[in-house]
Image 1 (cartoon, rainbow, N blue to C red):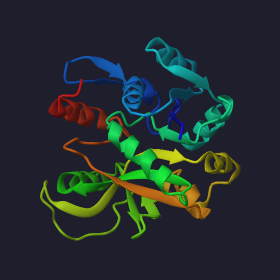
Image 2: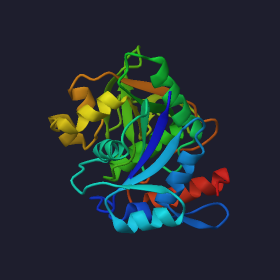
Image 3: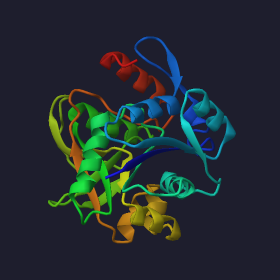
Length: 266
């Protein structure tokens, strides 16, 4: 099955304007922009036919072109990354069996997360959308809880059924657990990794739907699929010793850079 990765990147982020062009310094001391690091992560995924950056901003387009990415210009009216990916897919003329949305704020996404995601959607003919989830250890869960106590929006958590069908996603820590966990403990909480694989029919339907109340409350685009009854598959992925975090707030920059130094990622 043919596959396309689209990296949606917009300059006018409400929480962090200009985020795609923020530099992250790797273990080698070299600074590269968030969108470049996300593109480099996408290019490491095996079996993908094409990788493009989708943006509505000339500054991001120029930067992406300079580091060698293919760029698709989209409109300013896109309300989220999924809508931007849908518009980019149309602009490219379609023709792919699976379309992956690798959001431009997740440069630490290991290639096997995306490979497992594509395989999961390919092997489950009922699923319309698939997204990866990573079981939190105590260190990750405690980081989530610390963010919430400080009033910061940190990572997103996912809840799914025994068939791995998504039940809910939240910026709160769900499900509730009153237990205390040490850094290396396994927990019942799953971190939602902000990557999506869509069948083209599901991607085409999404922009035509109005945002539902849950999407509005949580600010999570994937809830539009759940509110419309779409089958979203949660694919559990393994960290293999890698740490993962998205860049959501300015405070996340030193956190990601520390992770990169610890993992010796350039």
